[in-house]
Each structure stands twice: as C-alpha cells, then as structure tokens.
Length: 180
Image (tube, rainbow, N blue to C red; front, side):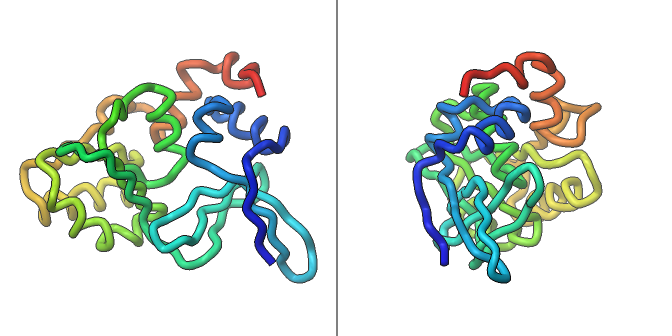
C-alpha cells in the first residue's frame, strides 16, 4: 500500500529546511510517499530512481522502496555531476552547483556499477561524494573505469562529512528558518 502525492507535508518540509533545502527545490524533485509497514502507516520524502523505486527519508527513517537503482537526470549536457544520495543532490541545487548539468544520484555506493555505463557518455564527470572511505573508494573506482575525465569535487567541502553537512555549515541559522 504505497501512495505518491505532492510534497506538502509541513513536517517533511521542515525536516528538509533543517537540512538547508528550501521547499521550491524539494518540491521540484521529491514527492510524499505514504506507505504501510507491518500494519502501521508511515510517510516520508520520496526521491524516484530510474527503476521507479524511491529513496525514502524523514527525521526518523532512512530507507527505500524497491527496487534500488540510480537516478539519472539528463539535460542533454556533456558534463555530469555524481552524488551518493539525493540530499546531497538537493544541496547542490541550493548551492547552484548543477546549473543544467546532467546528474546521476547513486542512491547508495552499492549502485556504483549501474552508473558506469551512462557515465561513459560524458566528457566530464564531477564527483561530489562523501568524505569517508566509501566515498573515496567510489571515486577511485570511477577513475579506474572512466579515466581522467573524472574529477573529485570533495575538496570544496574538506572538513565536512558530505555536501549537505557543508551546506548546513554555511547557513546554520537560516536552515531552520527557511519558509515552508
């Protein structure tokens, strides 16, 4: 029992605002997903992947509605940005790092192999991956597979876990006061 609707929930929008993501960006890329689990009703922010599954987030839950897959947003550009998760992608939108560039959101580093074939088509691949072992290993693998066209953009947020952590550090008070 899964229902998809426009993202209007004040609770979910407040959660995203606390992460530095304004309503306009959230509503452009995300939906509200109502679902049942073990007889209980839940709802979360949903970010659709290429296999029509959803990454699900709320203040208390991080998961997915299968199948797991990458999300490829194509704008006909010869450059592509790569993100581990959709919150980092939304953060890049807020920071204006995307500017019409194509995007692949891995939705988990375990989906990295699914991204390699589409990434071969790009002239430049910019990686905004997490500053942890998994993010560094994913970057190395992409560089091995795709060569010198792969660039590491994590130097933009060196003292932060990921791009969203960096965004929240730039606007610490604003992030909780964004209009819903």
